[in-house]
Length: 217
Image 1 (cartoon, one colour):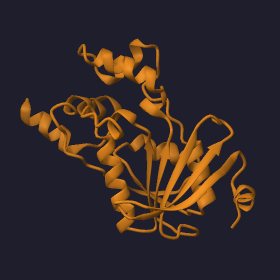
Image 2 (cartoon, helix red, strand yellow; image 1 turned 90 degrees about the horizontal axis):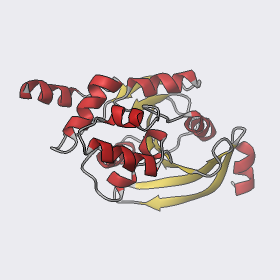
Image 3 (tube, one colour; image 1 turned 135 degrees about the horizontal axis):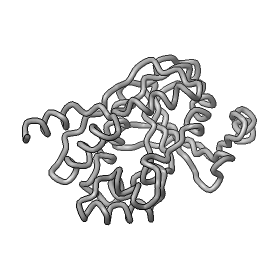
Image 4 (tube, helix red, strand yellow; image 1 turned 90 degrees about the vertical axis):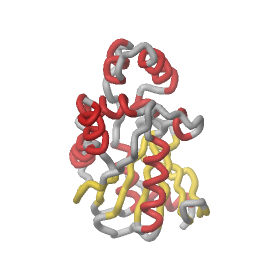
């Protein structure tokens, strides 16, 4: 199918900018680059394993960009490990897709994320750091992800996430979410407090973190 045909097939406001097969150490994928009219400066990516069109109960990871973890190897969060888990999972459970959204720092951008990190280094947790900067706890949006799933022909999904609010957000956009697949990464000494904050203040389901915290207490 030509690029112009892809563009006509995409939901309103969504544009397919490029597409190619891509071999990786996790497996071979088909990669799509999308642009969305409501946020035209950002290019979002769908990393597809297998034939998605018309498929139901597809494993889907909606993953937000994290330069500090994925590029610099930061130990403050588990984003890189979650992304690698998701890529390996869809490679072995095809069809599946990882939607990589360009919304750094839960949507606040890289500069604000680093400012929040500076506050965290002084002992403030991730939620209060955002609030001290006058920013929302979570500014991410998923309308582009819903449009990407529609374009790819996915009928229903099993969402790879520890965040029940993400399930609710997708459902509110009309995505049929049939279940949730946990992505449980063992915390390290640097990420443990951050992940505990996700449990107690952001409603994330991380039993391995809650259990370790309770043991320590």
